[in-house]
Image 1 (cartoon, rainbow, N blue to C red):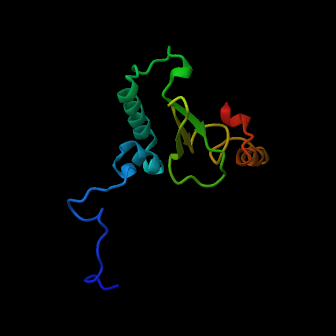
Image 2 (cartoon, one colour):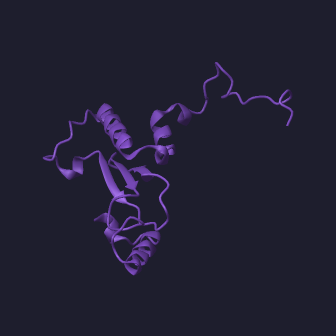
Image 3 (cartoon, rainbow, N blue to C red):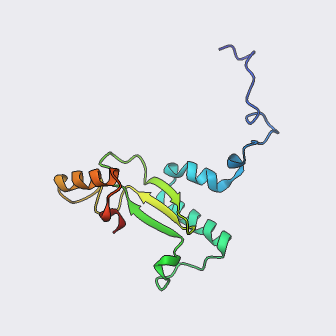
Length: 134
């Protein structure tokens, strides 16, 4: 544990940027640290990233839902949420899919009875959740 004999990793040394491509990619950092972001800040950031990639138009209620760059779903877990966001993925069409812990009919924030929530949580674990698609 003597600090004199320990060498710092190359990516911690000043002047040596990380060699790994993912560490330099801001989008990879966003996906890796999604749970540490505020919901509204993450939604704005993802919209700006998508706008820069494809020239996405401004948000409008008249847009076709299939063309939206950001989709939300509720987390079915009954555990106490540690943050606003529990997961962030990108689907094959390029749209971002953010799983939140505070909205929806399922999960720890739900107003539904406990026996119904247990059933929904079990279905979500076994990837049989039609309510999650709602």
